[in-house]
Image (cartoon, rainbow, N blue to C red):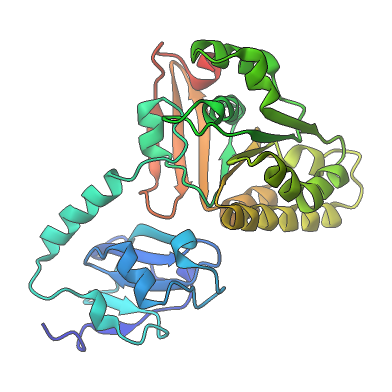
Length: 335
């Protein structure tokens, strides 16, 4: 195969790509933190090979690609089959001669389906669609996100396997933590209810300055002290959007700084940090959450189901899924 004729430079940022939906479909590999584009290919390429081709370092932000690499479906420019970031010195190593596009695409789909969550909720379709891995910050939008955060907290405490036998740090920014829900989940899983509650370390904030200070100054220490593999920050925009907050710009700047801090902390501690936002209060904050997190999803109750929309994920295709519980209820009513 003559690779030189099909390898061309790629626009540096994902938002600079021309997304003509009438063009051929392929796979875009990019950095989930800074949106730096790495490879755009009609051929599916094992993400591990992308990491090796870039020495596991994003050329845009310098973070390790094994934590930030994102794979998503994307269109290709007309007549193009393979484009790479100029930093990639040896793009030919990414192309395996003699393999058909159809065979690689099939194997790529299988690889994505085989990815498993490091912290399963126990609801099979939910775990297949919203794959949470250590080293990720996940933002969950919608009222049902609070119920899911409680379930994940108890599942983290649950013994290995399928749980993590881990303590949890729960930072309650929206005054929504419910001990009754925790007890109910513990009972259904056969756990000691009082011991389970003791392993979920609760801290409440009543102003956005208190919440910001806890995130930037105390959260890392609390995680290390109890060796937590999961941390939850509940209804995070509530305090920053409180009517008593007069300095709106300062509050937004603090909020943006705190979200970046949480993403970095999740990577450094190789843990999962879940941020919930029960309702949309300010679009700029919603955008900052979606842009900074490794995983972003929206949960909406819909009759007897909950609609889960994954809007950002490093290696799982985005889209909508209807989630039904064992009792055929919405997640909020079930949880």
